Image 1 (cartoon, rainbow, N blue to C red):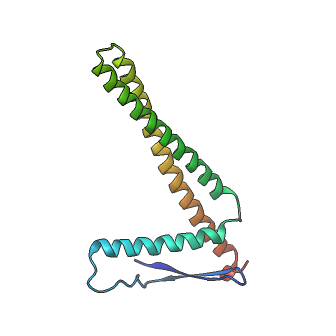
Image 2: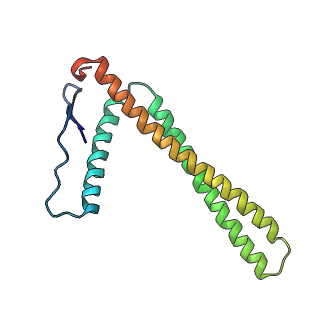
Image 3: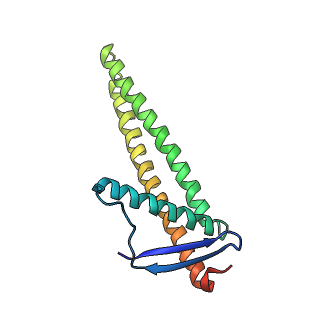
Length: 148
């Protein structure tokens, strides 16, 4: 699988990207999990460099990042409310109250909201990564050699 070889010149703010057929070198005798973790770490490093290269071009990645943060907070809030509703169900069942149905409906409602927030959070993170990748490639295409 071809990979991008990216070099950055911090002093001049330039970036050069070359498509290479080399693969990431892994130590001999490593397990599949170690190889996967090494590739994941290298990919994260490349994404971090690409993100900082295109960070100030347009605000689209920051918008996706803000939306991701919003949905992450909503996911945590609805997860907490769902857990509290489940505790309310257990408390009402232990005390023989007749409000367990109310807590059950709240738990279902908050569970659905939690799931929706998780899905939106996942989608916004994918959109963020795609926008950084698109901006990086567009920057390299519009500026020969990646020079600003």
